[in-house]
Every structure is written in structure tokens, then in C-alpha cells.
Image (cartoon, rainbow, N blue to C red):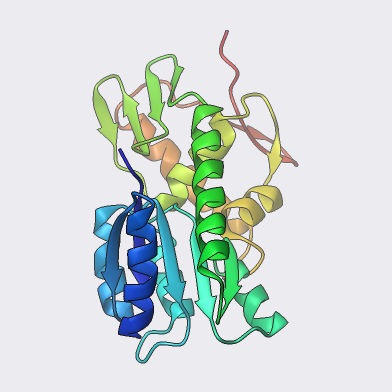
Amino acid sequence: MYEKILIVDDEEHIISFIKDALLDEGYKVFTAENGDEAIESVKIKPDLILLDIMMPGKDGFKVCESIRNIVDCPIIFLSARGEEGDKIKGLMLGGDDYIVKPFSIRELKARASAHLRREKRAINNNPSRLYFKELSIDLLSREVYIGNEIINTTKREFDIIELLSLHPGQVFSREQIYEKIWGYEGEGDSSNVAEHVKNIRQKISALSSKTDYIVTVWGVGYKWERFN
């Protein structure tokens, strides 16, 4: 199955230009002409998003902020503005790359292909499902189960579970977890981590008598219990 790419740009000729080039490569291509359409279009679960910054209404930065909690796929910003500050802002908001207009279509296709390959390697290098006693984690569907019962987690909660469970026995400080999950530009502080861990434990305890999957290491942080 070919990857799905979402193009977001308010200039019709640019959308057409990029779309034709990507269709030639065999990708499934979807388009949106403004921020609201882009936010609605992420329901297709794209594998990659090409996101213009300078759009009327919601610009690309605002769109990225709105969808980053929903999608995990790479986001490549497209912009006529090449200032360092814009590039840094885009990356801090959750973007993975930044291409300045006008750009070579060969470069765009090469960067898109590189990000998609990297995503495949990340998936292939990790098991798609983890098992810990009666709890299991589906990394692809981002779902957590106790037996056959699903635990409804928020994106942040799942991100914390994923981070810790992929490194069982390793202790992460609250600051480390916050920086990895929220990013350096996150609003709030590491106290958010404790609240999210508390919510995770409550959700697990509602379905299981075993609640010590996430262990508190006093004065340091948290770790995922290592089960033999």
C-alpha cells in the first residue's frame, strides 16, 4: 500500500504542481487549501504532511499546533520565509523539516521519501505490540489493553506509556519525560507529568488489580516495571 501524503497550501497552482509530481511517484495524495480544511483532513491519517505556513486564517504554525496532538506523521513546512527564527519556530512546534520556496521538486520528493523511509525503519525496528502481564500496548494503533478491554488514553498519556514501556527498567526524570513529550516549548512544567501518570494509574486500576506498571523512583522520576 502506498503512503498517503496531505498537501496544505492556499495557492492552487502549487498544490497542482506538487500533487502531479507525487502522483507520478505512486503516492496517494490529498489536498487542503486552508487551515480548517487541513485540520479536518487529518482524519485520513496521512503518512506525511506538506504544510504551507503563510495562509489566510489559520497559518501553518497554528495548524501544526492544532494537529500535533492528533497525528504523529512527519510534517514538512513549506514557506517563502527562510529566516532562522521561522525555521526554529516550526521545528519547535512539532515540524520535522522546513523547505524554503521556491524549491526544487526533486528536493521535495527526496526529502519526503527520506522522512517516509525513516518512519518505516522506526516501525520495523520496534515490535508493534508489547506485552506486560495482562497489559498490552499496540504501538501502531496507539491503544492500550488490559486483557481484551481497551483503556481510553489521551495522546499525552499514551506518549508517556510508550516512552516508558519501550525502555523497561530505565528511570526517566520528570524533566526528561516533559522535554521528550511536550518539547522544549511546551506550555507548563514537569509537574504535568505527575498528573498524567496519576491519570494513567487510575485508568489501569479501573480494569486491573495490578497498578504498578509505572513505578515511582522517589526523588528521581518514573520507570516502567521490568517483568521477567
